[in-house]
Image 1 (cartoon, rainbow, N blue to C red):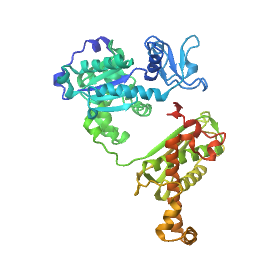
Image 2 (cartoon, rainbow, N blue to C red):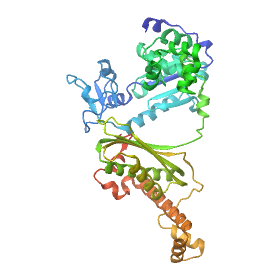
Image 3 (spheres, one colour):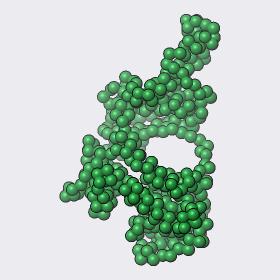
Length: 464
């Protein structure tokens, strides 16, 4: 890459129809830990990692100072040279979320929410088009101003990318900014093609993962120039390989991105799902893995109840010990009705687990997805104790009469069970909300292999 070409490039911002800024907080978690200690993350060697786990645990963040010494941002603890002296900071996820919220408030002082898209806890896209005249700044100056505000008020440094569309602003930040003295990269379509068309590896480019890069490499495609040239001579080949995603790949090869901030803000997903995953700290037996599946399913049922959502289908994926190198087991189960009742979902998912897993293989990863979730027909707030009386009163029957009739009518019995479960789950949610997640739990959560009580005090699988 021509570094001098990057530094000396001039841009005619007046020709830009829109201007976007993408800001990323440098080594965010590590920077927060340094700020909390009154240290400079640019000169302090610090990693964020849980010391209670093995030295194979992945560092959640590495300070810029350690990165400059060659330590990868996603290194495992044992990969850091033993000769290095550094601070190991246990992760504090709630603290990082609080810092992210404060930084978001800084942006809000200058940019309206409708012109802002929070991409992750430490990354944001800003459409600054409407603000340049107001503040008398060009797009790069706007990025520099916002970065300086975050640093002066919060103490966290940032990098930024600037471009006439969101893709170019992201690429400018990811690839160009690291070579800039002020940590700001700028790209338009012409500069993108001049500077990055021959850049390798392809995985440096947003939305190109290792799988996509490997498939392209098999046909001799290793750069964005190669993609653009292939699109010129045989566009159909790319569509045969990648389907509709080829359109995005071709646009990005030329630095084109038609999606605007207004498109993101107006987007409504046609289908919705709720999913959770867990990477276990050791190899679990198949029976222990079954317990984890039941725990996760029960928690998702309660979450669905709190959201007023129901589903008719759940899928699971189970991964095995890293040493085995075998594919995951996957499957799904349908219930024949829309529900969030744990009494229906848990046994069905546990049975699915028994059917699809290799029982002799130790389990290491579990993923559960509640598919195509929908709004429940009724929003009810019930107590744990009032349902039976309410149902009997509604029908003008005693509880005994109601039980006898429900036993003679399977449909009514099922409805009664579902209503009782709904009342139970809503009551449990209310208790947990008021007194904490550990205020009420199932007996299975006390088993040695259970993880729910530990995960109740984690955010994203890490300590609060």
